[in-house]
Image (cartoon, rainbow, N blue to C red; front, side):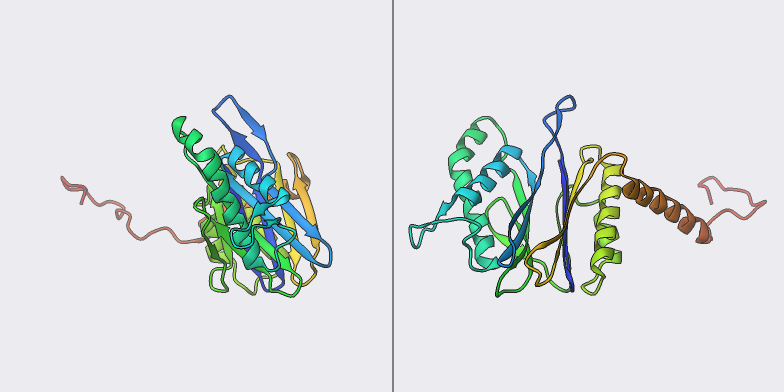
Length: 257
């Protein structure tokens, strides 16, 4: 399992992904799941993957080496796509091609064809966009009303994003909130873990502004985790206790009332 989140706000895009993969309790490894395709001044694209590692790696290889366009017969790579929409279609086509090749073998081995991607960034001449691409190759797009998308083990980090992120959120506040979302996921699910990869792409820059990996023991992330835990404890202590308790001296009946 993994956790990846993309946040698209007014000033740009934040994407983060953990690196933990496992094929059982005694077979845990670290693999990069956040991949960048950058040509400064032309495009800055980020692709984060969840699901079967062999499938996601095959898809990424096809995006780099090229997949055939059914309309033209030409090989197209992620670096050739003229728009973000066309690039998202290319990712979907690569997924379907990998499914055609490896799907029967996975089914024979009683394994699911399980993969999903977050794909975001900007290509020169077009807007910045963020998509979630499913294992069937179809996709949805992030909107102003819902400025984030998640893949993988998303349920633990979603409430924080729901409450704290809007389209107008500052770019680095969005990064901070995404990291808190990641921390909450890591605390609740041991299959998600450090290191964490981060990319920040500012709107219209057509280049990455931050590319960073958070390793075990990094001071900022450790401080963020401690401060968030302290803030949560202080918040719940500051809220009055529910008024549903038994008044002192009352006697409970047979059914507890």
